[in-house]
Amino acid sequence: MEASHFLIIYILVTHTLTSGMWWAAGSWMGLSRRASKHWMLSSACFGIGLLLTVLYADSVDTVQWMMAGLLVVVGAVSLRRGMQTFLKLPETACEHALVTLVGVGFALIVALPMGWRGGGMAACTAATAWVLARLALECFRPLRAEFGPETAATHATLMGLVVLTFMTTALALTLPQTPSPWQQLPRDMVYQWLVMGSLTLSILSSFVLGYVVVMRLVRRLEHLSHHDGLTGLLNRRAIEAMLDREVQRLQRFGQPFSLLLIDIDHFKRINDRLGHAAGDAVLAAVAGALKEEAREVDRVARFGGEEFCVVLPHTSEEGALHAAERLRAAVAALDVRWGDEGVSVTISIGLACAEHPTETLSQLLRRADEALYQAKAAGRNRVVLSMLPAAA
Image 1 (cartoon, rainbow, N blue to C red):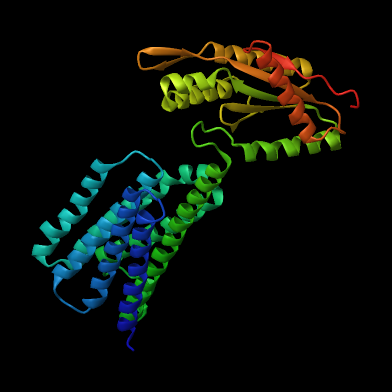
Image 2: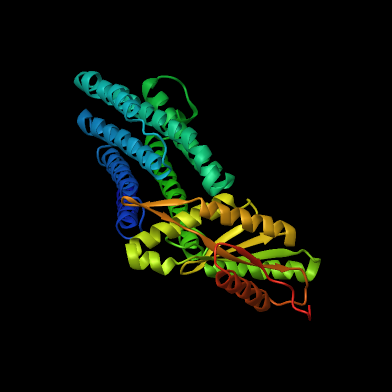
């Protein structure tokens, strides 16, 4: 098998797989369809552009080479637009249009009629290098913030190598008579290594993009598994895991904490009178008020139905009472609008302080639940503190 045949097969297999991968990512994996379409188009354009350069490597016809350069520029623009969509960056449509018009316009209007294949390809490769350099610069901070410095550095390094490859190619095409080390090598060898290097960098870039896509999906699933879908608060499983850790800290280091069980007063009446959609609006409003008033170290969760749970680390009885009253007052000040009607909401709170290592989590939850029951029996819209059992 000749080297050109191997390159053709390699290009077809590689870019067919990557294009299919982005199609599947947008269709089945829940990735932004707009971003995946851009990346699929980018992979297809890069693949067809490389394929044309291999098929017409020895051709004197300039049209195929100009078409290959045009496809590479479109591929770079699509790659950048996909990243801008994925990372929610400002779109740069005017810049893309200007770079494309300058690079591709020069190639089609000046280089093609004159048969200046090297100049046309140099314009296209320079435009591609500009787009990819801008991509590397604008994506570094968002990638570092969301996926860590290693991912951002890897992406920037790969983009830098691609830009260096395109800039070197543009200079070699623009200044063909300038002495350079690779001119001492056989032309076919240099050409094959250039195509192989471009393919390798394309594959590595696809791996980096695939990694960030998978990591975002994993984090999204982790968030869904630990948070309530309606209120955005932690769910019961997540808050119980945190309570277990707080109990272990109490047993090992004697660090106290407090627990609030909160119930919306007369919530069933709201559902019966206004409907479940109004009840959901009340739940969301109460959740927002609790989260807004809680400290940064506190953990707020939806415990089930209209019941919430707040964990106050390193908080003893006096501080917990102040925090509970602050939460109760914040919810009482709410005026939830539903149509033309305002819905007033109050909450009852049962408070239990964990200060003795011998008390188990189930006993603590039982004390808080009993205090909540007493608050509702005493007229609601109040905080009741559970006293420690005599044994403790």
